[in-house]
Length: 371
Image (cartoon, rainbow, N blue to C red; front, side, top):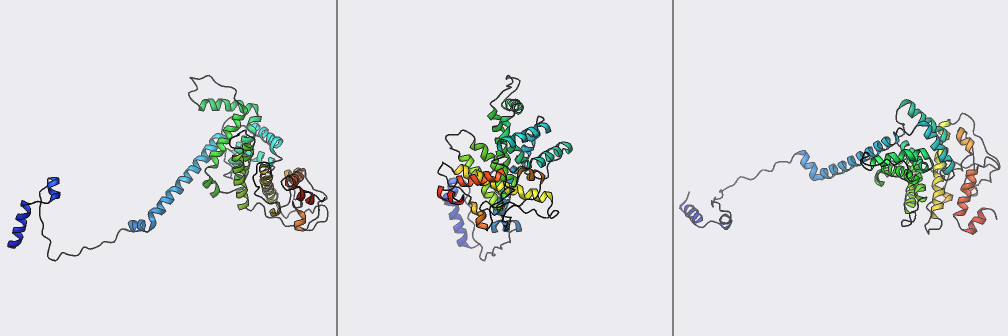
């Protein structure tokens, strides 16, 4: 070490730097090397490099997707648990479906009741879940609409609600509640089972459209002055958009029939295919019915246009129950070059035509009626 370097070191010891004075450390002066070796840069690990390229963002999105799937699974398990209540017997389900047909079939005519009863009976006999993952949503929708009309179901739910609200031993057992609270219980369960809007839109299905329509019709019947039917309007709007995404308004081809109906050749389509096509038609027309009804008198524009429905009108109920193929006409037959039907004209199809006339201007209604 040179004489100059020694003098610099001695001077540094006598006059330490400000940083060492503040921290109380010994100030050691280290002379830099004459030719320092260049620092070698090592390649980062593959995982770190992937994070720099956006891997961490992908991991974050994957975690979010896992959370949404987990929430969806929790909602499905919760729906299974609610529907597994011991008081929901096969006989009670048959009574509930009859109540649905009595009160809600005109607006929501898409349930094929013989098949529904068979699927429920199979579920009780085998104790196996239904192959359709969204079938529970339809069952919860049926209970949402009908629970208030079934006295025994109201009593059962009185005990369920009282046991969930606190310690049952320190409280007298309630045997009666407002019947509307029974339907509200299943409406809350259905809302949880459907999950958030983003999750619902990822798993579009005909059953989810039907569940949203049931929830919309239920909300429409509630007295909520502050919202003014907003929840019903939103649920039905979501159902319509999902039905349009699934293309439920397409699938039938018009044919030139001057009168009557054309029965397809037997054996061309199976009963399951015939039933599935009719269920989809009726689901789309249920969207149309509620869209027209909710838009009336509230200064809310309807979403659907009747001329865009490229599906035939619903067939008669007996044909629907037996899954018999029937050719009916379109809601606006003149647009497709068809004539007015002579037979196979159901009460439901007439109801849909009246709803269509109700939702348009008087001049157009008279023209469509042929006046």
